[in-house]
Length: 326
Image (cartoon, rainbow, N blue to C red; front, side, top):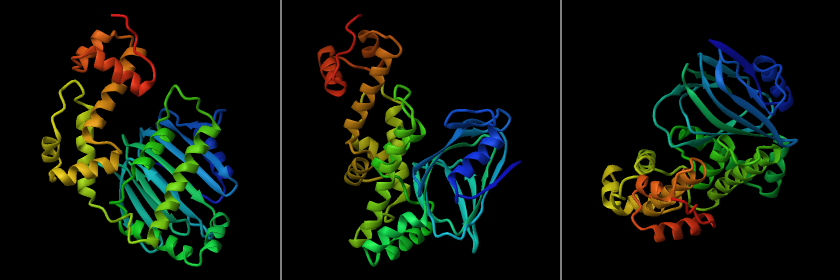
């Protein structure tokens, strides 16, 4: 087992530590794992002098133990992820172990004064984004509102109590994917990640402010959320088949039609049919412009029957007509 011990007090020291441990000859923003340890990389950015952005995107080739040491400062750590951890919350630290159970993605909010041990098992795929808020960054928010500190403290406490339940909102999920799995056609640079980190941070403050109302960002049915994502994964994997209908999808999710429809739209910002058609168009775009398939081949692969409707929908989605060669 490989062990790494660190803290989040200084992003430059953290970057230098992992550069020395993993990739001493590297020159890019990404710190790549040596093949014997893992496949993938770590990234460390400063959103601001008091706000740090950390990106994990790798597959472990060995068992790894991370020891995040507690620090005296009252910093806050936001951990967005799409891999599962089983947590045991102790008095002085959190013990987290990688789990291969299904997760649609979630976020937890931690106090940096509490340490953590994280066990990543061989073969685990880790995709996560962490944002560290230094206490000097947070203080102005507390000064603006007399009860803001209490709200943040309540948010952290609720996050720990619901540590295996909270899921990413639609906006958070999109930003997370852009950060951890950026589009290869997009210029990947410092500002690209910083801008998305700022927007992801904004979603945290909006959730904290929800405590002003009766809305509770942790008041969800996690099993139903998981079922929604299983259904959307099913749709993505069956784009060549006709749309099966909302009733059948609701049955697959073990939910009533009304509840399924409303929760699906809340999570994906689209109805099931809109989601399905959008994924089909995205797939057709890749087939045409990346794989070089003809319109006829794409229509056959994705079960399109009307070329005029397909071309019109394609243009409405991408503002360009598909290649007309057949």
